[in-house]
Length: 116
Image (cartoon, rainbow, N blue to C red; front, side):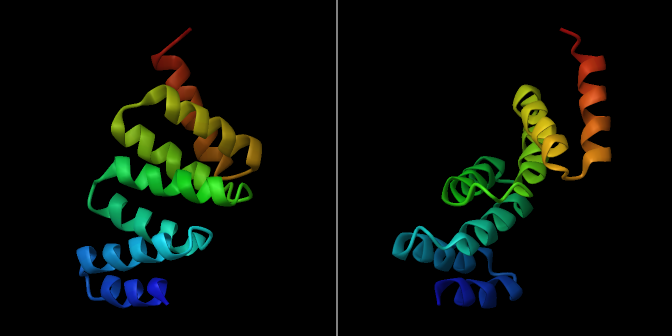
C-alpha cells in the first residue's frame, strides 16, 4: 500500500512525499524490497548518494539474489569518488554477469589509474 502511494507522488515529481511513503512502508514491513528500491532511485536522482547506497544495501541485506544492484552501487560509489568500493562492486558485476563489458572497462581504467 505505501509503495503504491509513494509511486503516485513519485509520478507527480513530489520526491519528499514519495520518500515519506516509501519510508513508512519500510517501517511497516522491512521485508518489502520495492520500498527500498524506489527510495534509492529518488535519492540517486536528487544526488543524495549516501542515502541511495543505504537503501540499496538494505535491499541487498533483505534479498541477496538482487545482484543487479551491484551495478547501481558501483556507479554510486564512482560518483562519490570512492574508487575502491566502486572497484569491489564492478568486480561483483563481472562475477554476476551484470553489465560485464562496462564493468570490465571500468575495472581496467581503475587499474591503470591506480596501479597497485
